[in-house]
Amino acid sequence: MMKLQTIVDIKPSEWKIGYEDKILLVGSCFADSIGQMMAQRELNVTCNPFGTLYNPLSIAQAINAKISKCENEKIPLIYHDGLWHSMAHHGAFSRPTREEAEEAVRQSIQNMQRALEEATVVIITFGTAWVYQMANDQSQITNDKSQISNVVANCHKMPEQWFTRRRLTVDEIVRTWMLITARYPDKHWLFTVSPIRHIRDGLHENQLSKATLLMAVEQLNHAYFPAYEIMLDELRDYRFYADDLVHPSQMAVEYIWERFIEAYCTPQTRNEMTLALKRWKRTQHIPLH
Image (cartoon, rainbow, N blue to C red; front, side, top):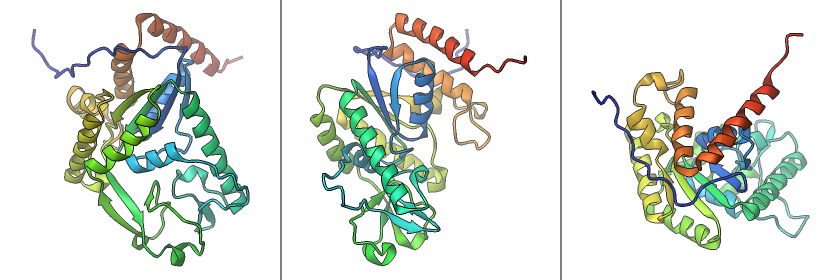
C-alpha cells in the first residue's frame, strides 16, 4: 500500500494524565484549544489565567507573578486609548478604570497561584521567540512611576515607537525555565511549540523563531509533545487550515488532540472522555420544543 503521509513518531508517555489530575495550561491560543477540549471532557483544567500568552518570558512572568502584601501598592498599568492595560496580560483584562483593571489583574494572579499550587500536570505552549520590549524611558509613556516589565505580553495596539523588537536566545529561554521547573519538581511538566505560524513576523523569521523554541525545549529535558511537527508534516495540506491559512482547522485540532491522548492517556481514561464529551454535547443541545 502506498504511504501518503509522514507520520510523526510519538512514544507513549511513562506517566499518564487522568481524571485524578489537576491540569494547568499556559501559553498560546493552541493551549486555549486543547484546554477547551479538556474542559468539554470534564477534566479538571485551568487554562491561561492571564489570557493568551505567546513568548516564553511573558509566560514565565505569569507563572512567577505574586501579589504584594501591601494592599495599597499600585499594580503597573498603562492608560491608552480610553483603557487601562496590563502589559503582562491579554487585552481581555483591560478596563476603563484603574480600579477595575487592578481588580482583574489581582484576580488573575490569585487564579494562577492557586492553579499552579494545586496542579499535578503543567502544560506550557510556546508560540514565538520574538518579543516586544518597552522603551527605556517608561515614565514619558505611562505617566506612572510603577515599574513595568521590559518584555511585554501584549502591545495593546499602542504606538510602534514605544517598543523595540528582538528574538530571544535559546540560553535566555533555558535559564528562565530551568529555574521555574526546578522550583516545582513534584509536577509533571509538558512543553509544546504551537503549530500556529506567526506570519506577521515573516515566514523566514517564523522558522527561526520556532527553531529557537524547539532547541530551548530540547535543552530543558522535560516531556515534549510534537504538535508543531504534526501540523508541519502529517497535516501539511492547506485543507487542514482555517480560512486565514495560519490557524489549524477544527479537524486539525481534533486530530492533534487524538495523537495527544494516545500518548498521554490510558485507554480507560480515553473511554471516560468519550462518555464525558457526549454529556457535554447534550448540555449544548437546544430543543426545538
